[in-house]
Amino acid sequence: MSTRSMSTPVSPGYVAAIDIGGTKVAGGLVGADGALHHQVERPTRAGSGDADEVFAAVAEVVALLAADPRWADVDRVGVGSAGPVDIALGTVSPVNIGAWRDFPIVERVRGLPEVGGLLTVLGGDAVAMTAAEHWRGAARGFANALCLVVSTGVGAGLVLNGQVYPGPTGNAGHLGHITVDLDGEPCPCGSRGCLERMASGTAIASWARAQGWRPSASPASPADASTAADASAAAVAAAAREGDPIATAAFDRAGRALAAGIAATATLVELDVAVLGGGVLRAGELLLAPLRRHLTAYATLPFTRHLAVRAAELGTDAGLIGAAALALAQS
Image: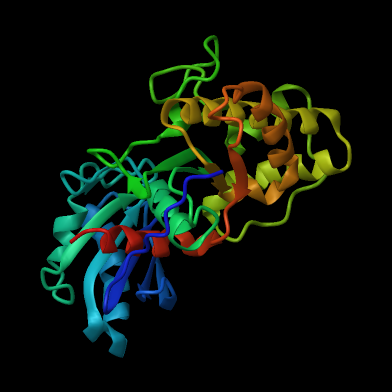
């Protein structure tokens, strides 16, 4: 039986939630029940070399939210951002936003006239997704969970004893950069054989091409540029559905790498559930079926065999809902 926790963040008003990604800055007002209201977005302007110009997009999103009558009931702000992040310092250095290196996002948001010094809480995007899925999604009710975002990279976050555990800097559970292949290829992070180099959308497509696979036709255009690498993985998925052996093997390899990483984490901290989201999960059972199969070979100890694997439920809303949940968890 799974150890469960039914704790849910509560607040009498609304949280202003901001989700900062490489292509867009999204905003929303999130109620005490986790319902998402008045969503807005602006392009990130990540190509700009000016940190203030990039921040202007965040300021525009806040101004649009503040124009809603419900803003009067906002009592805090939650910010989820692509990382790395440092929640202790309130800074972000997103890989895909070159102008922001150790950018003081908490200080800058808190200093906006609309915010007026309200409590402002920062979290990484994967940790925000974890908070969202634990509050309102597939990890709801579980006390110990690992939530993964499998997209152009692989991010993850942990729930331990019913609470999201971000760690001192906000990067705990960063599963994408644990080694699952001792002799694997070098990773840009400086290590080698990282999970991300085997299981991300980029890695799936790259490995398939290296084995001789070629797409028969261009995949449909993704919803936005942030999923461009997933479009390549989507082409591999389409080929796998048609029985292409290399494409099928690419997803089996990714599933095996994910299974090894999830099993190692479960062995370390005793998990009840692993929840997977992100663009690559559009492949569905092409990835989840081999993952579950390989998990039986890696999660062999008695306290890991019960581990459930679920698909995330909140989709693109997870960033905003999760940013709000992180803010609500702060007193």
